[in-house]
Image 1 (cartoon, rainbow, N blue to C red):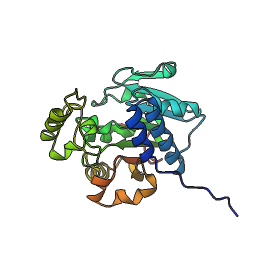
Image 2 (cartoon, helix red, strand yellow):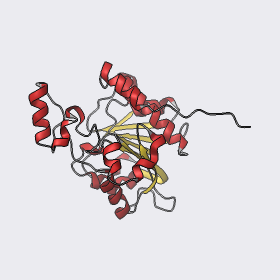
Image 3 (spheres, rainbow, N blue to C red):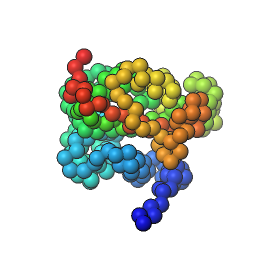
Image 4 (cartoon, helix red, strand yellow):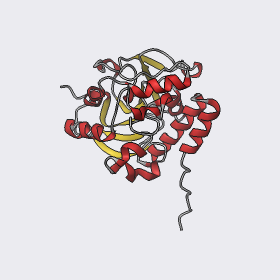
Length: 251
């Protein structure tokens, strides 16, 4: 008889507790990364020695750093170098996240694009060109906070449900402290259904798996239109480039 393996605990309560006590520190992001890596492995993504990874929009490099410790060959990329000191010996490249300059970044077995999509002015342009970053058979891990979720407004949640203009204004009157995220500047409205529709229309990347990032055992939730927009705090997609497609397919 095979040994019993307990299902992982839902990480959302742990994240909320950590955020309440320490805000979004490096440990908070390491918890996210560790849980996401578990999910990727469950979905059959090979990680370890010989696997080339691009941590795109890497920020402090916490996600990529976790993969480096597993033996992956990680390249960090972002608009500026925000890497923590322990990751600065890794390869780093400048990247215009909202542009089209992907050719200089190379191609990889796995691209991590974690919590960046909602900060792009033109998210569809990224999705349409992301296949250029993948080797044939490569995967893209995409996660983002959709607008109608409880955390859609980031620090001015839940007031974002009043809209991208009224919501922040109400928050500012109540909180009376500086706010980093500004709608139509560095935070944009995203929807799960619309994103899935773009991927289907473009047809270059195949959706291999999808789940609410912080409770992946409820993956069926993401398949329910409208409901998923409100109940998925963060949507995680595993996208694949079919083996038959040319590396960094030229168009």
